[in-house]
Image (cartoon, rainbow, N blue to C red):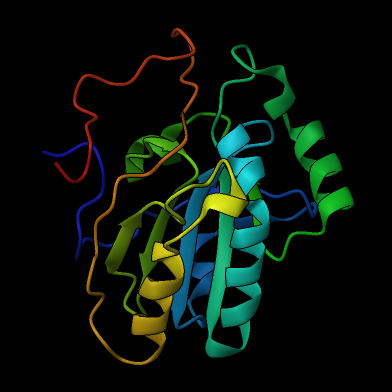
Amino acid sequence: MAFTLQIGEKAPGFSLPATDGKTYQLSDFDDTPTLVVFFTCNHCPYVVGSDESTRATAEKYRDKGVRFVGINSNDTEVHPDDDFDHMVSRMNSERFPWIYLRDESQDVARAYGALRTPHFYVFDADRRLVYTGRGVDNPKDADKVTVNDLDQALDAVTNGRAVARALTNPIGCNVKWRGQDAHWMPADACDLVL
């Protein structure tokens, strides 16, 4: 079995606290035609470098029935700036157009097979995975972005087309797993595209 959720598979459920003080479950988004779940954090330079691109994509597709849910699964022993208080502070200052959830147990990251931050998963109305991988081809440096794979995937989905390139490799820092070195990856985690 692959570490990362495969195209066509159903979105794993979750029930996680958010920076807005609420707890969200996957079912809270049942009325959303297209759902983007992405693994992110507070500190990663690839996240910080691509946040505005992600914001622009979320805003572009908001009126087309797309919602974004960011999940921070990073262990705070490895990176203390990824704790919940820093998440709240970051959302208060940045006002990102997505729900920001904390996956303290890392169970949701394992269920989805999150590899890096950021790592995007696009689900259709039936919550089947139609795209997974990177947002853009150069998340660390916005001035060098030439391809926005997430935008292309959402353009296809919201216009009733199949996603032409459903798999890309996420680019970013690896998820910080509890009890492991900062650069550790699970043995069965690998690139999505060779």
